[in-house]
Image (cartoon, rainbow, N blue to C red):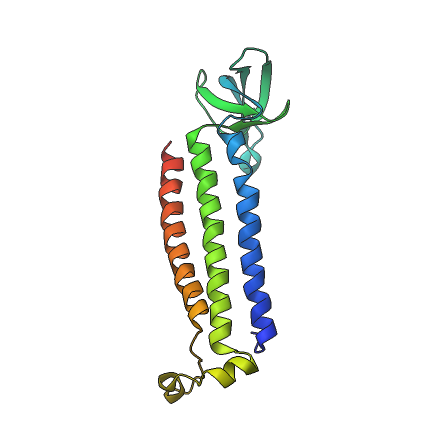
Length: 192
């Protein structure tokens, strides 16, 4: 565990940046999963075949993909999930070999990942406020004496500035709302 202010700040910034990058990464795929880009359509499973033996046994399903506008009709091979023959599913054609799930269920799962990344941003902000409380700068030490109740228990904590108090409360709110929203969207996505 780092004991210096720089070490704690570095950890806080890493969590904060990871959360922002996660939001950008997952958020950029939402239009694709809603069918706004690419070729959305229907995949009809025509056959499933089991190959291999023992632990190496796999079932591959094949089918035909038809885009909504009728311009793309492809034979599809290689889905390792087991579906009943004749099942029709919404899919998005990413390339000639890849068909991804499309619709509100897939978008809800991705949005839950975005909200999970937003929770990481909240944790990073919370970590920054903890650094200010536990490892203040020399100027902050001169302006604010340590908290007496913490000093009585053998800990040295410093009060936060009003701006950092607002950041801390905003971070707690961000964590609570994003975790609750991610849980709801995860349930919606799995049930859709």
